[in-house]
Amino acid sequence: MIKQITETVDYLKEKGFDNPEIGIILGTGLGQLIDEIEIIKQVSYNHIPNFPTATVEFHKGRLIYGILEGKKVIVMQGRFHLYEGYTLQDITYPVRIMEKLGIKTLLVSNAAGAINLDFKKGELMLIEDHINLQGSSPLAFKGVELLGERFTDMSAPYDETINNTFKSIAKKNKIKLHEGVYSSVVGPQLETKAEYRMLKIIGADAVGMSTVPEVIVANHLKLKVAAVSVLTDECDPDNLEPVNIADIIANAAKAEPDMIILFKELIKSI
Ligand code: HPA
Image (cartoon, rainbow, N blue to C red; front, side, top):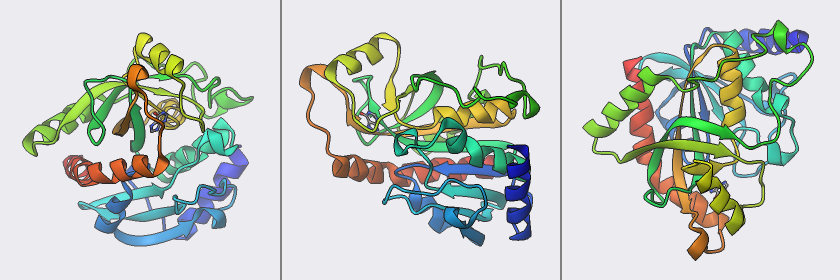
């Protein structure tokens, strides 16, 4: 993997991806942040050597380098999911690349279902901890110790200082920001009622199909990490309605302006 990483990093450096400070992974519901960036360079994922190629049609799939709130940022517009058939190593490869390019902080967004029924669709949740239910680890491969500590500490995977800043930004801007535990599943099928019941029992507040692999690798690389979920549906096992993907995307879009305020103000503060 080291040889591939070097090749990818050399390509991006040559394209002008010069020392970004902050990496951002835009999930469903944060695409509009792109409009706020003074874009310097952008490359489609399928032009980047050794990058997985984007498949899900509502993700445009490009890596963007530019200035946001005076900071050099690198942004993944669209991410890779386990349910698309990639490996956990593929999904997290871009995090390794962003780190080698220079980022010190990784900010992540995603869409998730609300397991905690005090949380409503269209609201936001700051991830304070997670439960990995994807069946494996992005660090479970030969040679991982050449890239960082194999037995990566996960006692505090989300940066407390950044989370506190997020909370004060939310308060100042009257944005409702819950805090909770995010659990990651493989998907792409949604959960059964019995699975939603189990998720609640084991301590999850939200469930989604991403983020945890990227956060694990970011911790492997000792990056500071924070992540925010937009809650797109309410997972009440006793009153479960069939999920409609169009509704999920529409609910994610509703929360987008608040997400953008949180991310922009946070970046300003770094
Ligand atoms: N389950 C899993 N992933 C999701 C959900 C859900 O209910 N909502 C949005 N992403």
